[in-house]
Amino acid sequence: MRIAFIGDSLTEGWPGASYFEILRDRLPDHKLFNHGHGGDTVPALWSRLQASGLEPVDLAFVWVGVNDAFQAGWESYPDVPAEDDWWRASVAHIAAVYDQLLDWLSRRSPAVFCVPPLLPEGGVAASFERRVRHVAQAIVEVAVTRQVRADPGLELLDLGPVFAAAREEDPALRFTTDGVHLSERGAAVVAAAFAQAIATLD
Image (cartoon, rainbow, N blue to C red):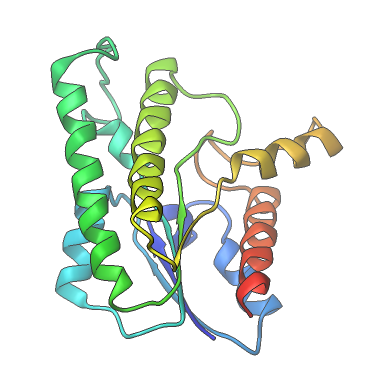
């Protein structure tokens, strides 16, 4: 299969470890394409793909959204209440753009896995964690709505339970280098989850 991995630095594989490299070694019979770019938000990713295009593939994974939660800047992030009008409007915009992105991808790949953003472990500001959850919820709602409309090629892949199971095996494991970017162990967990998803379609 021809498989595209679309996202931000977690897909690009820098900083931190690369789940993509693990998959490329594990799946030599498949052609894998890395379309990750550090710093991408959902709108930035959508703009980038429109500009660069995407060759038709058999399967695409879309994993993006963490950077959207930090729109106000990495250095000085205001602790604005979750009900703030600006943030609600931002989440609504993210959801609308994500829906457009899925429309575009559905014409280039018969199967798409939507992977909501998450933070595998603590270590970041509570306001950031809260907003990552809001973005994830918006992405899930877009995907579920499309499934209700009978989008046969769309699947949700929630990495939360996958990381929770890995943490139960060894609570001392570190899945990230900084609360966001993947450690070697974190990359291995993601690669295993993606490989299992690929196996269901292979």
